[in-house]
Image (cartoon, rainbow, N blue to C red; front, side, top):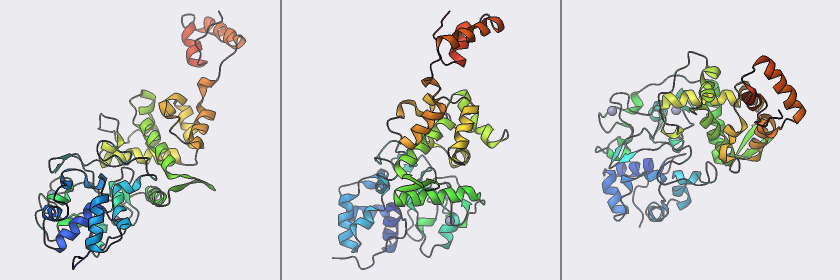
Length: 361
Ligand SMILES: [Zn+2]
Ligand SMILES: [Zn+2]
């Protein structure tokens, strides 16, 4: 038998958002609704949006008359095949912001929001794309997203809300309305890229340049690899951010090197630098990497097999310094020059400038 009131799933709505709206409709706490639908599975104490919701979707489909496929599409698992090969239920999952659930608390700000979307929605709801680490702006309002309550600093926690009226848009701790907050205007480039990336996730392909289209799964792997270079501890890599963004650019405060755990303000810095690398693809990236002596092996690391050919071939052809082996004649004259100019640096010279440790002398 169907429930008498059955809230529709809204465009790009997140599973947890839809569940909380249903609970709100019946003036129930989300926890109580969970007990009614799935008494044996405590889904609220884990990241519900990253769990397998197949069995609960069958039940919900039977209760709401909504197609099961639509319900399954509200889960972050639906990004499997377009964002990454696998969406992990726990731990790090590429490009998905973690909630850091500890009992029922949230240690991380894993659910971002646009206050203007929430204020203008006929029925306010949370979007799936707000869980993505590379989405930092709202393309619709051209403003930066927010990641926590601006009054008390707590992350969004939909299930912790004990009030059932409008609980989706009020902070569970201080009850401030997220829709009352404001945020800054964002750059046009960031908005364009956000649009391109979210459309890429929907289509599973992305326009790389001109008429070249690539699978989104490979594209997002490449973006994550480039971000890894931008936030690497290596000195020459860590110099890239100030070189790309200017000497006065803000510094990253995070000590670790996993982009999904970065705060929104740090991700803004990294993603903005990433956009600059992507400009005039691939010429700007090659120019910057060559100029800063970012080696082929640093870019590809042990991941060459996992990365798409359109990327590895560009890196191999342009930064594959180690593929070149100088002949004995070149080494002889190079070291002869070195002996005159820098008598003490025989081996170092050939190793550094010819990328080779062999000595003919
Ligand atoms: Zn918005
Ligand atoms: Zn608050």
